[in-house]
Each structure stands twice: as structure tokens, then as C-alpha cells.
Amino acid sequence: MKQLVVGFIVLVASFNVHSASTSYGVGSIGYSDFEFTSLDDRGLTYSVAYGRQVHEQWYAEVGYLNLINDSGGDTELNGDALYLALLGKANNQFGELYYKLGIANADISGKSSCGNDVITGDACSFDEGVVAGIIGLGFDYYVGLKSSVRFEYVYLSGEDDLSAHLMSVGFRYKF
Image (cartoon, rainbow, N blue to C red):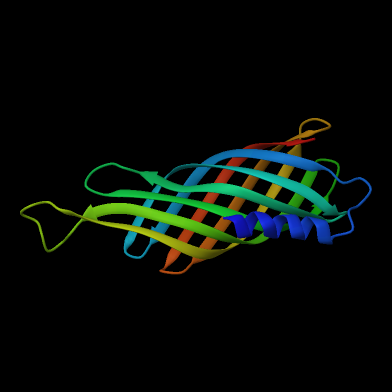
């Protein structure tokens, strides 16, 4: 985690910041289609992020993604990720179209019934740290001078057959 934050600080400091640079915060809620090894699930998800314009067409963003949170039935599955991304943007009078490329450190944990111990009902548990790549596409629709509604699709893929499709809507505020 510390490497991700340090990497973001170095990335921002290494760019020649554009004179109209801005920082922003984003909060989103959405839907996740999540797969890890042989487990899969779908459900509501949320995310928060902090970004900074580092060039007139580029943003650097660091954030948190809740990938899945399911504790129903005999299976429990939780997934969270911290990420660092670079966003390329194109804007017009209505908003900003952007693409996102980045890297994430995902923490996947859970319990499921073991197939070989049906009588006692003991659970097999796991807690894995997984490195993943992020690619996304989104649009920030301007609703005010400093505020936007964000529509975003993100695909996250990593080790141990980690795969997540995230679709979300959120609010972005420049400060």
C-alpha cells in the first residue's frame, strides 16, 4: 500500500504541472461482476478516488475500489483494491471523455464449504494479495463549474484468474 501512495506522489511530482491544474475527489456506486479462481459473484460496489491534473490532457489518480462484498449462504467473498492510474482526457462543452490505465493491489478473502468435508461443515478460508491491471473508459458530465456526474466502466484483471467488470455512476468535485 505504501508503495502505491509513494508511487503516486513521485508521479505527480515528476510532471510539469499545467498552470490550470486542479485536484478532484470522486465517490461512486455501481455494479460488479467478479471472478476469482473458481468463485464468481455479482453485486453492488463503491469506490473513492483522489486525482490531480498533471498536464492539460492527463490526470493521475489514486483510489480505493470495493470489488465485491458478499456474505450470504455458505460462501463468503470480499474483495478490495487500492489503485494508481493515469487518465487521458478529451473535453468538450458537455464534459470530459477519458480512458484509464493503471495498476492495483487487490486483497481477496473469503470462506467456502470444502467439498471433501461435508459432514462437519468446516469451511476452507483464503486471504490473497493479487496484483492486477486496470483499464477503463468513462465520461464526466459537467453539472456545475466544479462538479460533474461520472459514468465509468472499469475492467480489472490479475493473478489467480482475477477478473472484475465494474460499472458505476458517481460524483466528481474539483477543488
